[in-house]
Image (cartoon, rainbow, N blue to C red):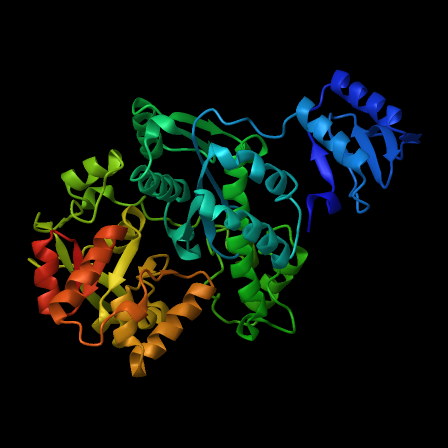
Length: 508
């Protein structure tokens, strides 16, 4: 859909600018019409578009399907009087925004977007006409996203992270968001000079963890702005907002289409607590006596009222950064946490662990996954979720994929929920048969509903049929280093090679 077939909105116009616009509309042959309600100041019809100026300072132009040059010219004139977005002040623009924080269904989705100033005005028209405040179907958001994504060849990049519902329930959400945004920014820092960057964050209630890091970026020379409703003034934040919206809407669409989550012909709706369909679905599901599905946020007041519970939902303390070694935490605070500096401090024996052991145990009849200290063999509570938010990426070797470890975990204990799973080309080649192929299919399914994200670097066709085990191990570890990803292995040889490179890994 071209911009000429969509309406346009300009906010916070002055009376003086509004008068100039009205005068120009009339000079171009516009016809003044009667206002239709008390909130309107004036209406002018030009060609096939009606321009309405509201008393609160907003001007709206209906779509122009005739592609009339007079309408397009007046749009450009209004843009010159009241630019929608703050012009670039640095060579690189980084925007961060999230969606889904207040919903009762599904993930919270966080996105960081980085773009060179040269494509600012090319993205301007696409982004300025998109409306994240209104309800649209997934196809609308996907169409906007595809247009934005086409600018990758011009240096545009983005990073999406999710916070699953049960972690929204269990932990302090703002704390998780602080860490996640810091990790996104740290990734951008690897390839960008902070002195050339403007970093703008939509303010959700930034905590001391992220504020400390943002001050570090300021000291590095970055321009840092934290502002409420930043997507209304900064194009880079609007881009991040649109990508977050598209990602969340795709996940909600999958949930709505799944017959397992429908009851009496009713699906979950938008997930918004003001959506009557969502509320009706929640009530019917609760009345059925079934356990809540994985995507329902049980800590939210809407759900608690339906359950008839008045007591406050108990949350555990925020993520325990004390589990990270002193060196790891210092590096993270400087935006330099790497898989080679990452280490876990065992709270039981005090060991500094460059590797940990994966464990599955029972808790009230439910399977739970966790990690153990390799020295004292005691379970390190909250270490899994801490690794997820401070690191976020894992690379399984071929044996892990063939054993189906990750999908089995996602079906029960969800240790790997929210991680980005990086599948190197050599792993995809070796696993593309039998049980390994089934696992690759399951991982793709979990990715499609947003429970994990998949990255598939390299080309399978370039892998030799006779690749040696040494060359294979090197290739997998190189990918772990490239992505700053935790290696997961059950192979002693791979483990020894990873240790020689200082790569933090989980041993099965």
